Length: 391
Image (cartoon, rainbow, N blue to C red):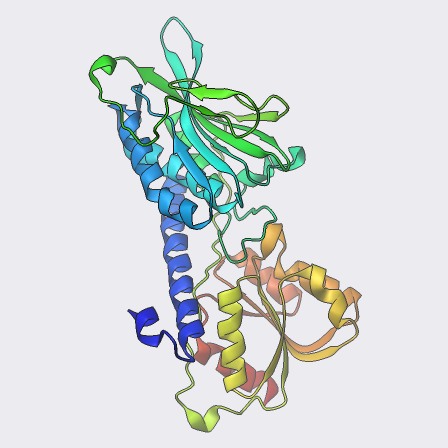
């Protein structure tokens, strides 16, 4: 509704930013809720036997619109396989894998299907596979991507928060499923989940029909993915994350919630006249909102997304540094502050903003002479701190 009402006006860009930030916040809150439940151990799997076709076909249908908008071919190989797992949790795993495949594939294809693997005296295991022709993942990063807030370098600015694969890993540990990854840089990746097969009445299950073919070429080479089987890339590196060692890291949250533009009080709008700010923020929408807020208060803002951009402002002095804690690719606001110091960039006041309210972060902020403000950032709290420190 907001986008429609502001369409064609000077507020269109700002309203689009509000909508995108709200979507990001909703996604973040949903993921953090999942993480909290997983870390607290309150999720109890409800395993049943069910046909995997219903779940896969609905997920492919769900992402087909986004894939089409990006010019990506999204294909699904129908199957009659039944599996034994928790249907809701397994769907969330595959939803996250498919979401990543769409996000990190700029062109080419994404392929979803089932592959038969090992057979024992007691069970047969199949793999649910998501292939893509995206960036691929370097060998040394194939373990790191399952860490919280870890993101691969890409052109998708503002997309993703680095929790999707962490949730995949934690849910699969809970379910006792093995996560597999085969990937080649600049060629693509295949994520897989190993699930126990159930044989009850498979022959009577109708095949969900999404693709027109019974077999589809693998995105990687001349291999063919047929019904209930798939070939992995020949020249790929394989990493298996077993469903063991359930130790978890503390949850820290990076909120993409945008501060509201509280500029109604006209009398105080220019209290920051001639004040220079350096803003370290990797989320474009949040950065735009913060720059607008500070401009309304009379300040001028220079924006950088991380330490790689510090060289452009070497030896400059700013009145205030405002740094987000969680930045891209594991970098933190403290890391950027250290780089700024090495490049002789100075400040009268340093402010750290983060949704991580742990004592460790607060203590580190105090040690490095940062003022601490929690997210979601309240303009009134920021204004009060600036007035106390600068005016």
